[in-house]
Length: 185
Image (cartoon, rainbow, N blue to C red):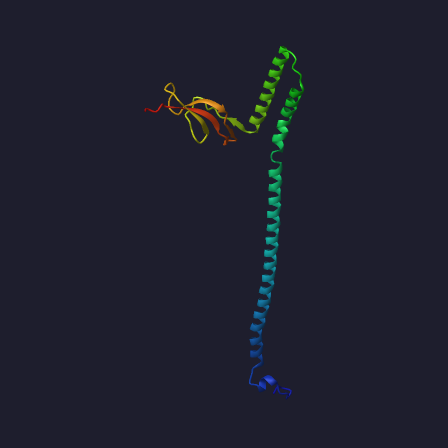
């Protein structure tokens, strides 16, 4: 009983009211901590899902840009070659009635060739020099073997089609004739 003469249920149950409040306090603290952790977990999960979505969007955007880049990467190369195409069209329309015109025609073709060559070289084309070199199967394609004692074995005698590198990488191997020693019979 308390001072007023009223019986307190806790007192009758044999429990101290101060001890009861202390036992509720850790439970309330744990509940509050649990609620706080649940809120943090939800926020972190939301941030994770948003980050994953942003990453997926970024990856899709990069793939799209890559495809567009590959589609239009040769635009500058084509733009560089258009004047050469124009020159060839003009040359093909020209009439060649006499010998002087033939010389001018040949000179024009040489100029067109030089313009094309310079344009490709500017883009990174590098011609390979094969004549007199030792045959290398990594950069040469042998289309004929010529038996000879006049030249050293495996030396390139003739370049049938020039080989090219593009920005330091092999673009096309040179097609060549290679000297070989005659076989003794």
